[in-house]
Image 1 (cartoon, rainbow, N blue to C red):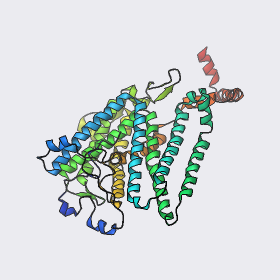
Image 2 (spheres, rainbow, N blue to C red):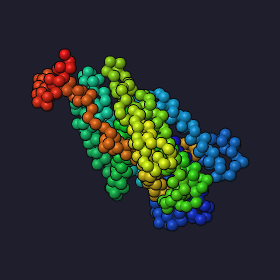
Image 3 (cartoon, one colour):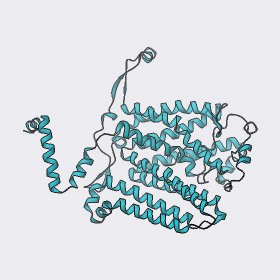
Image 4 (cartoon, one colour):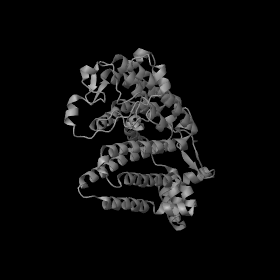
Length: 444
């Protein structure tokens, strides 16, 4: 599920020559090199472009060769993206976990490579241990929330669920004590730097990948549309910047251009509306992902909410005079998709700028060389994490309402006397509101 894009860190090169920008081969300006000369450098990975592509594109300039390599690999990744969507939500969850682990490994490896000469004890071991602890906490919460009936049915799972947070805290506390015991004289400050490095990485990578899974359970459309909007924006911004870019956008990423930024914005808005229209008509995409207790499997089937039912909207006078239409028939989700597309185009790129600043701080071009022409998984996923957080906040603020099925799950976990007390309280409330007699007459 990596960000299937043409590349942050290989920003839109249509805005002038390298000499005008005064940027070295790693994308670091001369002034920055002087200021940051004391920062240890991470070795730049060798060119990992497949030999068959090198031979096929040998006659092209480096600019166009890079364009074709990225294009071919982008199409391959998009095809893989469609394939895993076809495989269903469980496979998507596993892919998110794999991406999370790879992103964590890339960032931690940079820290280890930079400070490897100090031979810090237990740094990488403790980093992976903390990753395990945090994933145990988040995935345990998810299992308890979405597999409630299965958890209550199995005795071992019920015990683990009951004491889940205490177990998670105990695991983390063990790692904390191990870190304190690993402190070495003369390296205290550096070890605390690395302790902070690990925890910030966990915050950025693990927490936000967990939000991606929560978005997925709200319906696959809340997973696919935001990711696709970021992909579309990055591709179209690159294309507009490559062919029309002249005006630099931000000094942090000198090859980003205003032409690419604006072109990507309008392209992403149109793409989001069209993709939402196509997907909103299918239950497979719009229904929440729920666990079926009878079949012990996930199911995606429901009566679509009003959000995914066509409605008529009156057009403003200006648009009516231009188009000749008085109303337009849309899914309400398409209106929400404009907000998602706008965030992906305007704020989303700042995730890429943040990653650019991080890489400049350590004088590296990419987080890794996992994908030829694209860099590491983190290079393709930097904007997606920011987007996932926005979507989760957006759903909680404007979309999600009370969930009756979750309330029933909690009621069934209570003792019989507690259930009876709630039943009598609810009956008295409905009677007072005058709703219960009407319900009884309807049943009769």
